[in-house]
Image 1 (cartoon, helix red, strand yellow):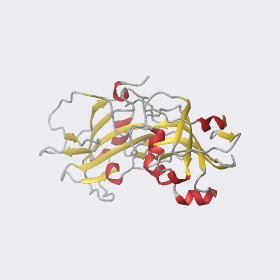
Image 2 (cartoon, one colour):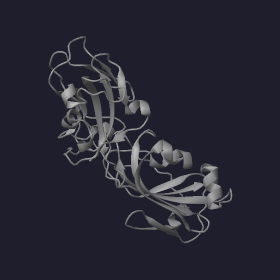
Image 3 (tube, one colour):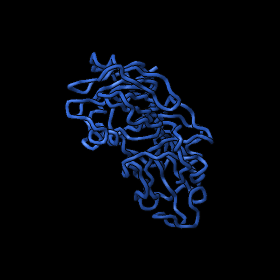
Length: 299
């Protein structure tokens, strides 16, 4: 069931009678569809043939795993059948400019049938399909996984002395203020927000947003927020302190980790991290990436 964080997301569809001409059948990797007659619409139209539950799509900055099948609305021929992979909604908008509207408030498990007129599609795609300007494309979308835009768990009371302070921007980007003190010798892990999603195990491939700063200078040395896209990590591919910070945590949680050098990069410099550095990370757990290309990422 949807949690309090997304209770306000009400799904509104934009149906059209011509969507009834689309017949969708189940297929292993992506939905298969056919049309009985040419499908014409004057504006982007969509309806749900299955509705899901869980995290809704609320922003084009969100990552999703979708199965997409694209038909030529005039001939009913399948032009494209794309297997599930992780993609940001804003990237899909480059091909399907109205897709944010189609996906708004859709949840995992949804199957959406949409018809998009040529004028609402990327011109390159229109010429690739060979659509004329009064024709439409039929797009069937299976919403498989929706990743959170940022940690949405319940804020926790954090105690202890010399703990870095985390300040969040409206979109969730963390700023980290390191205390003017000697770096702690031991690994410190604090749950800042407690999510109610799936629990991470040693084998999990979580999708996360994180920012890392150096204790000594407070400087950011790595941030997915700055790169504009979350990362999928494999817990055996990150430094030990980062792994310990994540294992056993739940999706939706935000975790603060202060990692001493021996649980990070030790006495070797790594990229912009000097030797013997204590690292401070704030990590948002956005979901678990189950796509085929959930690569063994290293941190």
